[in-house]
Image 1 (spheres, rainbow over the protein chains, first blue to last red):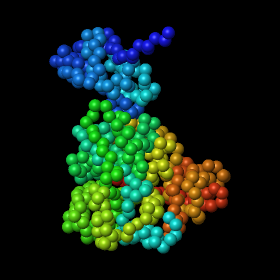
Image 2: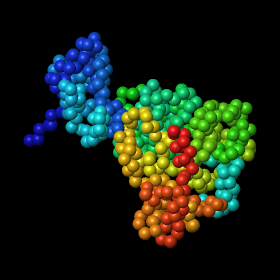
Image 3: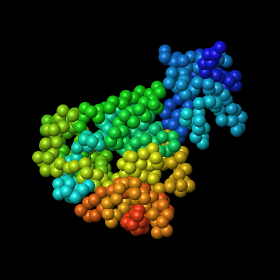
Image 4: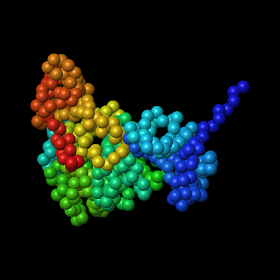
Length: 115
Length: 333
């Protein structure tokens, strides 16, 4: 018997969550929400968006993981489903990284992608 | 343009006097009204020209490009009426609406398609301004790419001076119900009602590229010589990395050129160099009182003014720089 596929979600790694927590505290938004999204633009057409906000919108998809509340608008979710938000630190680190299985191409600087 | 007397008169009016062209007849331009706090920012992110600020009355032309740097459409925008009026290429209103919608996530932007409830006339030629002035007490000289509202025949219309059909002209936009009275006023003031064929001849002689002929999803705006509408300083926009790479490494494959032809040929006709090698193809062609003129996308290494190429099978095409490209490249500097 065929089983329903597990719905894709967005995950945040422990390392990324730790850095999100630190950044939110330093901005005085320790109880805030991490808005994760996509906007049009950037060389490849779609650019990742990260923002600390006080509250999620009613229509947002909410994911709580590793102590961080993620708020994703519904349209962005389509492009981000299955994505892991990670963090690459150190001198050569890139900061927050979106490991997005939907991204077919990315621009040279890695901030935009196309599907 | 065929050689009928009326079309020759239409064409000559556009070149030497004043012609009025019904741009809302097939092939009709698209007319959009765009509002919202994020509208300009979104357009700035999705197109080639710098659109960070657009003061009331100011116009700009920009190229919407896809992630491969290919042309979705060339659109003209002007800030007016607490929003932006936008002219799309004929038949491309819905394409632009859909494109903007696809890239709208949480932005505050509304794009309303007014193609069917507005009119669009273009008044062109050296006597365009005095002709409009004879129709309205509100007429004043506008700087290029600026617009204002005036009354013509008791109708409130947008008058927008810009390069249309490749040369200085005035776009007139208004409610569809007032079209005939505005058109009649312009004709009464001396504008020659001009056919689409004469307008096409005017456009080709001016060297202005259009969608599906000289540019589109089959090429990038650099090939069509739309450099004047591409900001090299604005930062990222969709397709920017590819366009920057093409420019930096001189990898632009073809180049729009104006051509003098010795006979009428079909668009798509191949050009060859003296060794019979492919040198490009004719993209637009028209017969004018000064001979057969055309536009061509020419392989870059052959695209030099003064070069004569063979038109398949036995004709000749002499290449010139397209005036519109030269003029807009200067504006862009």
